[in-house]
Length: 240
Image (cartoon, rainbow, N blue to C red; front, side, top):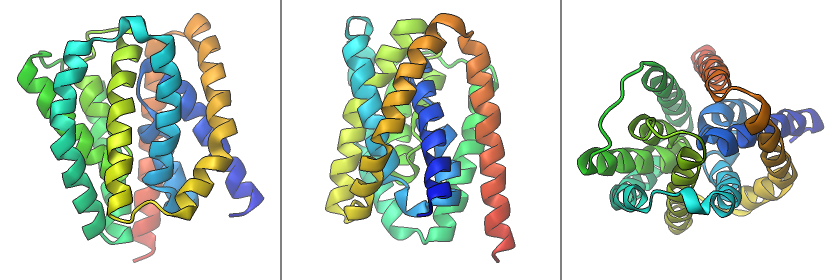
C-alpha cells in the first residue's frame, strides 16, 4: 500500500470511528466503500477489528445505558446470521463481493433515511440481528438493520445498546471468519496500522457529541456512504 493510500484509509477510519462512537453505527457504511476502492483485502476482517476496538471503548463508557434485553434477543439472531455471512463470503468472487458491498450500502442508505420505524418487538429485533450478522460478516456493514429497529432510542441509550450488540457480534464474526480462513496476516497488519486513526476518531467523537447535531452528522454520513458506493459500482462496471 502506498503512503497516499494509507492516508486515505486513515482519514476514512478516523471519520468512521467518530461516527460509530457518536451514533452507535456507521463504521462499515462510511468506511467500507472507501477501503474497497483503496485496499479491498482489508474487507471485511480489518474493518470488523477496527469496529470491535471502537465499540469496546464505547461499551465501557456507556455501560449503564445498554438495553440488555434488546441486545440479548438481537444476538440470538446474530449467531445464525454470522454463519450464513461467512459462507456467503467464501462463495463470492472479489467483483461480486464489491458489488454486494455497494448494494448493501445503498440499501442501508434507503432504509435509514426512509423514516420507516418498525416496532422493536422481539421478533423484529431477532430478525434485525440475523440480517446484521449476515451482512456484517460478509461485508463489514451490519449497522443499518439495527439502527432501523432501535431508532426510537437516542443518545447514550442508542450508542450503548448498538455498541454492546456489535461488540459481541463482531467477535463472533471474527471467530467464524478465522475458521473459514478469511482472517490472515494482512488482516492483522491492516488493523495494527489503523489503530491510531480509530483512537483519534473516538476522541473526535467526544467533541462531536458535545457540539454537533447527531441528526446532521447522520445525514452527512449517509451522503458520503452513498457517494462511496456509487464510485465503487462505477469502478467495477468500468473494469468489465
